[in-house]
Image (tube, rainbow, N blue to C red; front, side, top):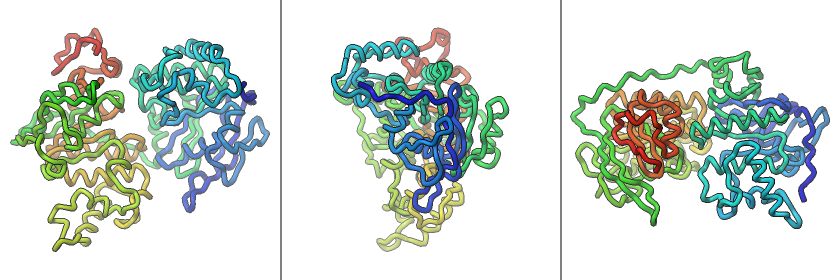
Amino acid sequence: MREEIKGNWSEIEIRNVSKYFARVVANKDVNFTIRKGEVLALLGENGAGKSTIMKILYGLYQADEGSILFDGKEERIANPKDAMKFGIGMIQQHFSLVYAHTVTENVILGAMRGVIPYAKAKEEVESLASRYGFDVDADALVGDLDVGVQQKVEIIKALFKQTTLLIMDEPTAVLTPQEADQLMEFVRQFVADGHAVVFITHKMKEVMEVADRIIVMRDGRISGDLRKEDTNEAELSRLMIGRDIVAPAKVDFEGSDHERSGLVVKNLSLAQGKVKLLDDISFHLRPGEVLGIAGVSGNGQEELCETICGIRAFDSGSVVLDGVDLSELSLRERIEQGVGYVPVDRHRDAMIGSMSLAENIYLKFSTDGDWNRRGLIDTNNLRQKTLESIEDFDIRAPGPDAPAGNLSGGNQQKLILSREMRLAKKLLILNQPTRGLDLGAINNIHSTVLKARAEGLPVLLISTELSEIFALSDRIAVMYKGRFMGIFSPRELNTEHIGLLMAGIVPDDMSHVAGEEIRAEVV
């Protein structure tokens, strides 16, 4: 048995909603409407309040002021169960799936009570998948599915609950270009069926492709409510951050005249049981060059970074930096060799939120004599260097003694980048450096990468953002299941090519391309 759904409303109004967290204003006097039959894009920098207002609508947070009206009638949404009764579903960035259960079991989990007619439920799952063109096996274990298919399972879960308003938070962050196109097609069809979608994203291309109306938020308030045909990317950027974004210029890489040889990786392999995490990886990254590595997350990118840095030991192969074999060196010794590393998860691997900016800067310099005096921390020197980082990297913070955890995501990332740039005398490794950041922070980090490149630093850039890969890379490698599908010039690739390579397929029209390594078979 399923709960009765009151999803026959035509318009939801969010009226004068405010939300406070201690002294922080998350939302202030937010007003806008959501109408059936349209896609509403929600744009804004990190901390602008867009996720907070959607969590209020979904019942995860309670508004401190204001109200929510359905066709003019005020209703109270105290929790997600209340939201689901009005046909509101939300797919967040981190999926809520049970890997040990099948697709059907995940879909019905929490949606039905009493004696469950499993066969009938499975038929409905298959019918929903077929209706929206989702190639999903209802009997498959979720843990065996690729991340793009897992997202489709999340969507089917929402549809099974008779969702009429679907809130999607950064839905294409883990998808290949082809999967993103399929998602956009679903959004169009879902809205054409008389439903509504709120699409939270920082990707302008997606907004201009799929949105009917665009809400822009800044500092917890609405700074713009526009129809797509009445605006453009430049205006949306100004509304988001209050100024124009000027993309940093990149000159073509014309080879290196440095005496240094850069990074040479040969036949690098790593296995976990019978699973090959890295499979015979070879490449040469020269000084003053950016090698971009594209691919869906979880295909060996993090393992590659960690084996080069010394966090993981590899099974076979070699890693040589400027003629020095790193294979036998410890993590500390590799840092001393001049390796800087910005990991994908800053909270887990790169910073301690309760410590100050200065203390986080010091974390990787604790054995460096320049930072210590007579066995004690040289606090004056540390403070001065932190102030330099704050100024040079435009870190928005009260000062060196402020807790790093109080900064926005973009400013935390700039703090980590400032530290790793000090360390990176010979190599800079960046794993998803702009993940989840807003346009202003992304632009700042891109400028830093190109400055490092211009100064002759080899840069290894891992990113799932293809626009970032094309904007910054001199050569592009594509990873799939721990292997390189090839290393190419950006001129040899387009979005469709990369999407297929990310799925383990070399396109037919690339058979003539002289990539450094091409896997012509389906891996």
